[in-house]
Length: 179
Image (cartoon, rainbow, N blue to C red; front, side, top):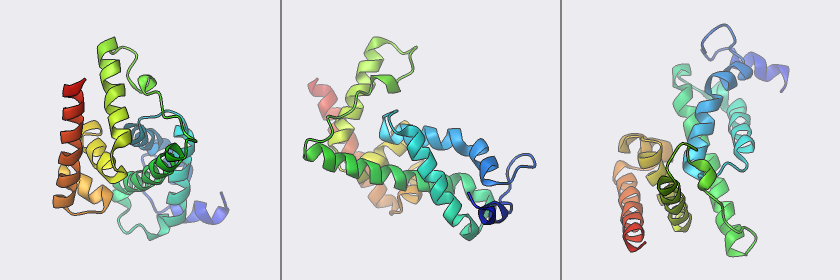
């Protein structure tokens, strides 16, 4: 990181006196990692994706109009970052270069074996869905965001967010009923 980035980032309020990119990372790094994990469902590459989010944030922090909106802004960057990664994974799977993921490690170790299988199955179904639909569904039902927030984070209308969520929900429910 260059000294210029350090100076630009001092305008962003964080808790305590540390208002650098490092301070922002310390304050929001776990939150960003949680968003990424809930959207992607994989622990592989999690640290790389978090770094990608903060790298992009370092490039655009000077343009942030409302410093108090940094958490939502970081979530939006995380959504875009995961969207790119999911599209790449889908292309790699199509060409046989990605065998898919084991999702059992995403679930809390204290969860029952049935819950672990259920959540892994849901993520496998999500792997088959269009990326935009998967992200909208995951933001709503895994991350727990409102439909309005889903629309904001994905850059679409509320109606489109609803369509994506319900389209995915219908497929998940049908697949779960079949299994």
